[in-house]
Structures are given as C-alpha cells and as structure tokens.
Length: 99
Image (cartoon, rainbow, N blue to C red; front, side):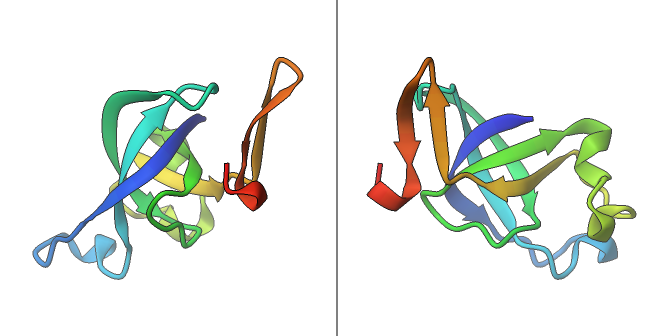
C-alpha cells in the first residue's frame, strides 16, 4: 500500500466496458512525511475520494481485490481515505484539523 494525494481527475469516454461507471483519479504519491514524490498514477476510485484528499492506493494484483473490481482491468486502486498519519510519535496529517 502507498500514500497519495488526489490532484485531479482523468476523463475517458472511450474505454473498455469493465471500466465504465468508475471514476479515475490522478494521484500524486507522497512520503509518510507528506512530501510529494512527483510520481503520478491514475487510479480507480472505490471509496468516493475527492480532490486534495490523502488516500491509500494499492497496485498490482492487490488492486483487483476489492469485490467490485475483480474483473476490472486495473493495476492501481484507491482503497481508503486517510484520516490521520502519525510518524515517529508526531501527527503529520490530520484531516479533521485541515492538516
């Protein structure tokens, strides 16, 4: 699993049938200290994430482990929206506090 921040959406009207109905989001992977890596991935959203939110993404065969994605051609999925991150005893991210 990896951390990322939603930085945009990807719109595609022409796509395989199994991707229809899924929101595709542009995720910038981040380090646990909240610093961006500038390594972007397009991920299938399974949790209703929105712009600016910190999320957990899974890649590879794990990306299809969510029940609704078993037959979807994806190798990156968003599986959680992060509420807080504690690193070395300090809170580095708190969604409720607005970071």
